[in-house]
Length: 286
Image (cartoon, rainbow, N blue to C red; front, side):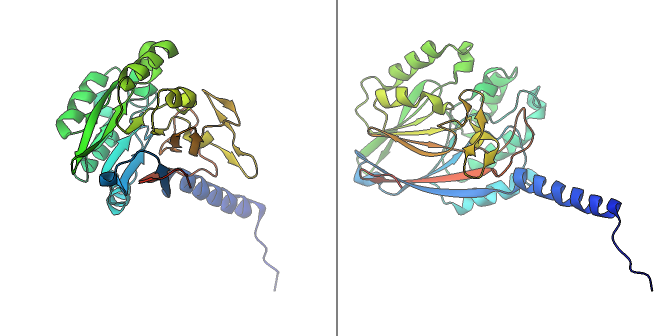
């Protein structure tokens, strides 16, 4: 009896199938990160506040009607949902009719908790952004475009503020920073800031913000063992603010790795991320 061995073609096919499966998992398997933020100045009424932080969907879909993503969101039991930009993608969303995944997600999220949104650079150049904003507002999404709102609970309050991305001003960072200081000026209330851009961290700290939620960096898109995130367009190689929690003075910033992709279609060792931030009064971050 002849010894039957796998052919080179069969091995190549099996390798291609495994590689394709692994690539699919990297782009579609949702990871979940829980962060405890201990921050000074938080009133007792808001101790244990749970914020579901989602960013950079880029019009990706996670199951029919976003079922997989919405199930995970519901399981997190958030007090509020914070969206930090790029719901749509400028390369794949040319009109409102193509924004179905973004609309599905927001419709489902508004049934869970109040939803706050600060737009990113892809919204800035989306031709149908005014229509998208109108529809999302009708769903109940609260737009934080260079403004703040107060959240009151048991006689106490915190401020939720948000900024439009610099892309709305043709990357004019001066205009962006002016809006930051205008939004935070005279605010002695504990403030959570939603902003797409993490690289402006020092400015957020200078403005006296206690908590910042950001995205944009996609976790560096590719992460290498021992080296971490590789590259972010607005930060360059081996970026400092690509993911996780960063502390500067009394300001804590949590950067989401995001959910979707844009120009580069593949994530590597960097699966889509749901972040749940729980706030407590204190002086340490873990």
